[in-house]
Image (cartoon, rainbow, N blue to C red; front, top):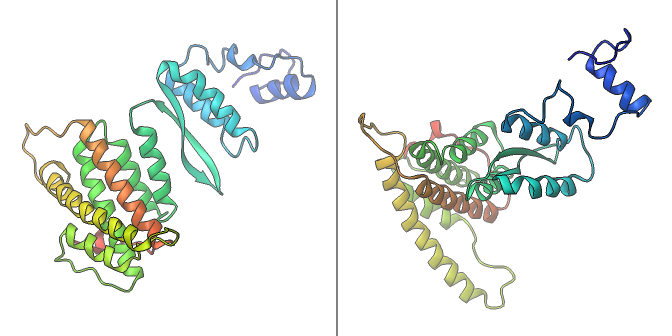
Length: 269
């Protein structure tokens, strides 16, 4: 960007800003909002959000991040926008600005938790597709959610020394994964009663997964659709993606350690 200083030694925006903000400190702290080179007062919403998220990037800021994030979201909320944590770099959070959608912040947080156990480019791509498609491409969101659950289960089974049979349906895969994990609560006062309740919940999850498989066959990716096909409404895709995310998280958390990834190309269910 060009300089606004007439002197030849300040021939670009960087030298200009450095001179007036670091050397002389003769510009006001909010100069950037009225500087026509950046146009932050009149730019598009997405450009402004990108600017705000860059000010929180770990390469830029090492302290006061939570305080500034709270300030940003307090002022963005009335206009329906938010800045949420979506990734990490070297253990430090990375944020994304977006139009606030019911349930999206929750899905973003689930995405981050899953990545802490299966943090690979393949899984990250699946999670990104799943969460970003819930509003615009519900059949893609549903199909990808099912694939993520298959990957989670197959990866845990492989770590436990169990080979997943390609002839297993999704419910069978889930039940086999359940059988190799220890769901006994370690700190409950009545461990036997708690374990019984947990197993009842897990049986219910099998019913949910069966419904997921049917939805995937009817509305998800991987099956031919005619030209007049209409997918499910976004609210159902959000429900499904949220449920699948929770199932994946409880299985990965119970497993308790990072599992070796089994990619979709290695499994056929």
